Image (cartoon, rainbow, N blue to C red; front, side, top):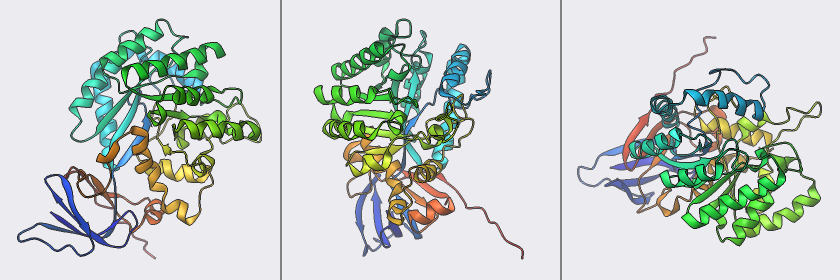
Amino acid sequence: MLFQNARIENAPPSSFRVEDGKFTAIGPELKPLPEEETVDLGGKLVLPPFIESHVHLDTCLTAGDPVWNMSGTLFEGIECWSKRKDKLSREDIRQRVHRAVRLYAAHGVQFIRTHVDVTDPSLVAMETLVELREELRDTIELQIVAFPQEGILSYPNGKQLMIDAVKLGADAVGAIPHFEFTREYSVESLNFALELAARENKLVDVHCDEIDDEASRGLETVAARALELGLYDKVTASHTTAMHSYNNAYVVRLMRLLKMSRINFVSNPLVNTHLQGRMDTYPKRRGITRVKELREAGINVSFGHDDIFDPWYPMGTGSLRDVVFMGLHVCQMMGYEEIMGAYQFITTNAAKTLHLGEGYGIGEGRPASFIVLDAENYYDALNTNAAVLASYKKGRKIAESTPGDSRVLF
């Protein structure tokens, strides 16, 4: 099949051929082969499929059940979720994850890293997501992080539950140092998590310093251990909102370690703008990590949704456009070129975070996975909230949409 008149990643119109689920040719002068099916994309934007770097599928679509988070804080959200966990079952999780995945698919997402709470003696969510990972692999590829929502050292039998979750099939080991009871527990939990990952050859994704307290400095421990253990870019620090409040003298010193460690960062602009700064009067902090400065230092940063209609965030549709749109605003990255290239936060940068390797992206010999947006470039796509017209997974169309027709009658 030959796709013509495509603007691949904001480039001038070109063409590409898909055979046996792979890109076999890409260029401006491709001509149809005898009897070859052709698709004229009409100058629309073609991008690699979107990637969700950070979400909690096990908690999605549970907002208000059994209670609402009235304060809008991270900590009340954890309390609400601890009450909801009593109702967890395989069928409950399966139904909600299937609904969430369909939302994502409609918005061009084909890869999802989901954090799954393992502070649950039954580990029912982990077991169910491992099953769903296999079940959904032809449409949505799931990567699972064993996430200790209530702590590793601060939750009964927390270490063993993490070990058991890895044995069940987790792809990555998580931690939550800022929620541990003490600074000593925080450091010990990180040492345990990264050493477990190194021993079991797993990735790492830490909920790191998701708090406004500038004394919360788990990030330096994560980066130091990533460096010492040789894990490097297999490690991700998610949120790091305390970095928003660090004094600049400390950040200058920290940046050297961050660059040496080569770790990834994930920022969640929608949810952290909502959650952070809740204890402030005025001025109120935005609570987003230093995305622009990290990027300027050559450090990989991707964006994630984090939550979809759950105890921490009462909205969400699975649209990563909303995430990028908010992120550019709160990080003050609104220059023309910054906007044009912002899709990288949810494509190529996210692929590095998930460690997807050479199998991701638009290139000859790679799997023919791509999306078509109803715009000529990403600036226009972001500005107009352009629809994802089609999503192809290894050459097979898995989602499509028809833009609505609105008219002004004057």
